[in-house]
Image (tube, rainbow, N blue to C red; front, side, top):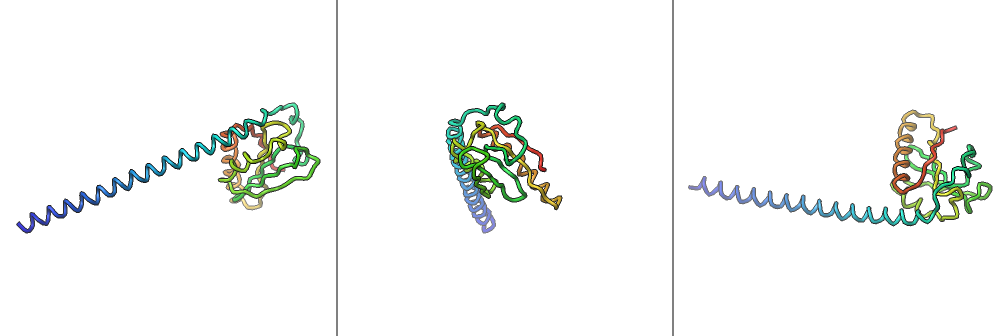
Length: 164
């Protein structure tokens, strides 16, 4: 009889722990869904901001092959960080501002670039940084690919330039 009571107590405790685990998993799923909705909402807002910039006109930039002559935003991907270069008024000959950003901040940062900095329309150059260490080159390449994916998701045309 003592053994039977012990079994009942163990079953009740086990059921309670299982119920707590199910509630915990359900709460985690709800939190993940809320975070996904917030991220989607933020991405939609970024797309709306960028939609104010006209689509690119390839005739304006097709013959530009030198980074110093590029008038639109220019992104260089390193192994850990991205460098975003933006001309102050969308002219290649003017002062440029370079900003180091984390890859996860790319969409928010690009969406905040003023429309006047997009002389050629909604197109950005992405280049891989030059590295002596092959491991850095691999990480930089992964950052290039991730950046291209993010930028395309925002509706930005990407011109990928080889590193020279």
